[in-house]
Amino acid sequence: MALISCPECKKEISDTAPNCPNCGYIFLNKQKDIIQQLNPTEIHNIKPNIGLGIFLIFIGVIVFIVGLLLVSIIIGIFPLIVGFALIVLGVDKIRSNREATCPHCGKIIRFSNTSLNVKCHICNKTSVKDGDYLKPIL
Image (tube, rainbow, N blue to C red):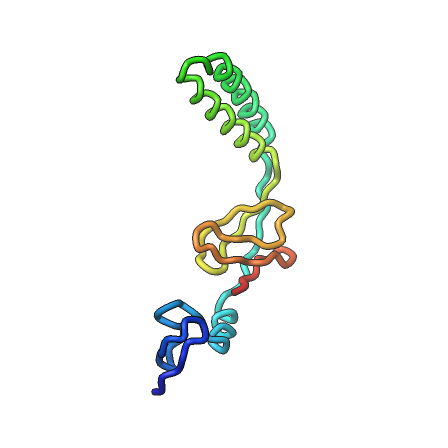
């Protein structure tokens, strides 16, 4: 067992280590092995719920208007925030989205149809869409 210098942080580590214990750098030949272990996952369409989306937007607009009327009092800020959140949630229910399992961490992630690269909000690793599959990239 020999000691080598990490290309990222320049500290000495074992040549048999799969990655640097100091900075986490994964060595190139180890990266290829890891990529082969990570399997692409299938992408599923989420059907839009137009009725629920319109209902949430309608309620959100009403709550937002009430917030505008109450903005002169301090409590009016809360209906403004809730109304805006309901409108955003309603628009999200109307749009068609997709979901897949993250190839890196295995958690379910949602993204829009127009996304080419998808970043997992849990492990912060990026995957790329390839047809109906989500492929990992390191």
